[in-house]
Amino acid sequence: MSRREFTLGILGGGQLGRMFTSAARTMGYDVVILDPDPEAPAAHFASRHLCAPFTDTTALNDLARSCSAVTTEFENVPAASLEILASETLVRPRAQAVAIAQNRILEKSFLQEQGIAVGAFAVARCRESLMHGLRQVGLPAIIKTSRFGYDGKGQYRIDTFEQAADLLEREPTMLPVVIEALLPLDLEISVILARSAHQAIRFWSVAENRHRQGILDVTIAPARIPEVLAQQARDTAATIAQQLDYVGVMAVEFFVSQGRLLVNEMAPRPHNSGHYTLDACVTSQFEQQVRMLAGLPAGSTEQLRPAVMVNLLGELWAEGTPPWALLLAQPEVKLHLYGKQDPRPGRKMGHFTVLGATLEQALSTAERLRQHLQRE
Ligand code: ADP
Ligand code: MG
Image (tube, rainbow, N blue to C red):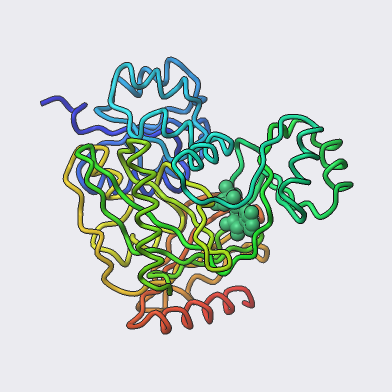
């Protein structure tokens, strides 16, 4: 048997790629990553790092020839790159699913076609349609670029029509955009699922997510919501995965707004709100990503302990390396650092997960530790 059969590839070597690589190598696979950043967090764990742009044909061909299957850690992969890979190896998820998830206009249209509830929105491709869209959706609104947004980047809150005109003056290249009504949020939740090539779907617990300034801050799992709402969220996520003929691990973010469940967006990959699965579940989202990619049966998604995950962002490094001893002294806390050198504010540097006998206990420990970390 050739080594290629036991080699997996991934486009992107950030923290998601790193956790995938770690899981895959633990399971006996070699991993080749393609990422233009020589300091890519996944590079330390990879068997081989192709350090080249995502559009580099030579590197893409090398990746495809070395690996029995290739996946991606982020949605902003050029569709052409996935097509080059697909001509020589197995690519999961397929290019079409990634193309929809990477473009907010295609994503919203797809959801609407499926009859899935989303918040009020409009699409604008020029100045006139921007103003028309804002009138249609109503103020306050959020303008989102159709591509390349993440962690709240590429989003602008708009309270007046003048603000929108100024914004367009400053950022004329932001078009086309999606305009969304700013929704009153009761809660945000996410569903992460794995779908196999045999169309079997497994769900992890629905997660409850708190954001700060557009960036995930805390995930509470399982979400403190009625079972009917959890079931509705799982059903909706399953419909999306089936309609995309999705193979792999996928996340769907939801808003609960005035009691209604609305889809916010989807991610064609493991998700920050599923990091708790590394420590709290029989099978983590990354091990499952490996299993789905390699065509292995799915592992159990059962959650063993209630868990609360807290993101560690760059601003925590303002006074130097944070006092990790605080976290490491705790017997039920798991620290995960991503090996990034440059702690810019808002940059995801790591996370920690608190396991508890009860969710309340995990939550109060997480809150206490977070406050200590910020004060030290
Ligand atoms: P990203 O790709 O950056 O995750 P999202 O569209 O998920 O972008 O927005 C990030 C966060 O901003 C959401 O999780 C939510 O907290 C807030 N947000 C985004 N859109 C809306 C909206 N229409 N109404 C209210 N809050 C929103
Ligand atoms: Mg989001």
